[in-house]
Length: 238
Image (cartoon, rainbow, N blue to C red):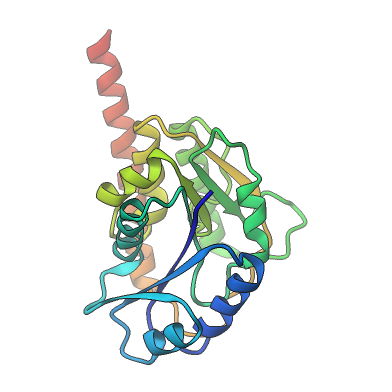
């Protein structure tokens, strides 16, 4: 196994060094790649000092765009596995082994905050209801029981790396929800494992409330369009 740890980062100079150090301690044989997504602070400088490889994008393209760069890098350098870890301290490097230990037939393994009912990561109100709805519908489409389709903590391997190097969605929520639908349509197996996850330790969320609502609506539209396309394809085959 040749593992690439991809860390998309936008103005995360407060946490990036700590995140890299934790990855290096837990996964010493991995390659750490920080994709600096148009940061205006010292994120890239701190990442280099901490020992990571850095690709700097001159303007912000979003997590999806940054991860597409990571998948292209992985494909060009023959990495067998890519694990995404957020730069804000939410994802724990110590939990990566759970992703690596999942069913080897799955080319995408999601680290779920909600598989364990006694998990400490709590989300309430409208946001939690929306996440449950997205997980339920996406799971039906992908023919897998999914609980946390908006989780960015995930392992990608095999043919999914090549697919995502060219077709990974750039838009917010596209990089999580839509990417799973794209993968399923390409015959890629998806699974989940329960993980522990922190709340973000620093920086600011990439989306404000109004933008998050809009992108949630967009994600639902993508899902329903996928259902329509699947039904149309089935009718043509019949």
